[in-house]
Length: 383
Image (cartoon, rainbow, N blue to C red; front, side, top):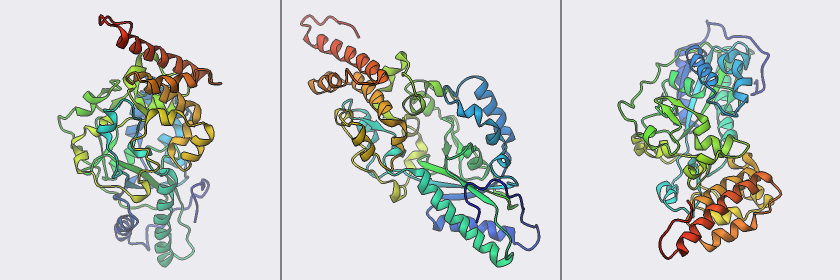
């Protein structure tokens, strides 16, 4: 078997000797048996989507995600990641956690909101392992009809420059919502993964869009990052600001972040299709109370506790420094309390200039609110 690092094999499966339609049906069935919500097959052609992606880059909407530009070629040419790629098996795996009380947490400024996809285990490994098992079944089936012939493939789960949503749409397991995320009749709380392969498999019909005239996702975005239907400016997106951005969060956007310390789900929470979401895979169940933690508790974690508590979590990738940066902004957006003021003052002299700057901003807002509360005549002492 060629693992996810295979890049040189180019042999393709002969057109004779395999009942491709039957194999494709088995792949879909095996995917369901392995826990995927749905599995479909697409041609390895992203030419149309590549043109849209190029325009997005030219407009600078990728912000500081320079890797988007550096990896532009393999994203547009699947064969650059696996020579000989002909077909793409696209899979969808639900993650919606049972304990996720999103609206209640967002309404409580003293709580920290973590994007629902990051409440449990890291999806990268889990999804790749499951895709590898699916690939193993395909390989075993081929060995019965074509003994000795290698099954050239590579699996992905947000682990390489792959146009995941495009393949999900082409394979019929999703359509692209106006927020640009992959949508299905079971909503958008799912992860996507792919198997690139040299197998020339029959493809599924592309997914039809079912957003209609609905524009709730556009209207609900706290920072107006969805600049037009199917167009997002990452520079305004809270998920980008709290996860991808390495430097200071722009001042005008900080108040709009609210208590979101890692990612943002507003465009999904308002989507009518998510009313039909089912509880996701148990592997993504909430860990360590991360669905409704208190901001001051998270802000008290030192670097060692951050690493220990978030071991195996996707949150860990941003590091302790940016974690504190994000929480400082959320604390600055919360109502004044002695606990919040004390927590911020404890980090005022943090070794990181990034953390100190955001703590100072938050303290200035907290002090203004405290002074306002103490003002007897009701005059505003800054906002």
